[in-house]
Picture 1 (cartoon, rainbow, N blue to C red):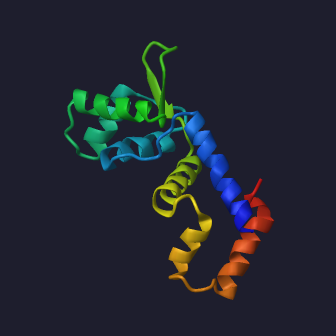
Picture 2: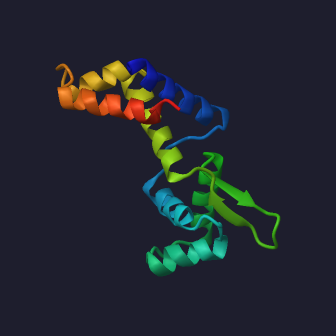
Picture 3: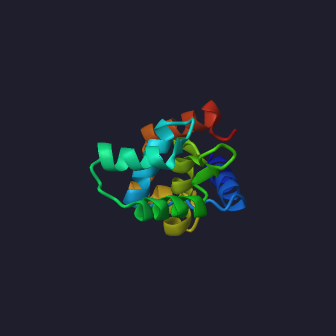
Length: 146
């Protein structure tokens, strides 16, 4: 069972590394990402600026917002479509893909990529409870490894 979890995390890590995606962002960048995730068709710069300054009352300058968007593009989290009259920005990953990438990064950074070390930390070094083991088995059985 642990091997199946390791394989799933390794596959996600390969996808992220192959696409040069960094699943980390600042709190300010996450405001833009949340907006783009809610608007799958993409948004123009002026729409993003209106959302941040109008709805969220941020009072950020164009240059500040442009810097955040550029950082998100550099991280592989946002894509820009310049095929229309004005550039449209959209999320390059779904929220689920981002969450998996972030979880994989945490596993890699803090637990040497080992699901065993992670589970040991999660349980305080104690054996898994029967309930937790059953939950993990159910997850594996339901297709986590697909």
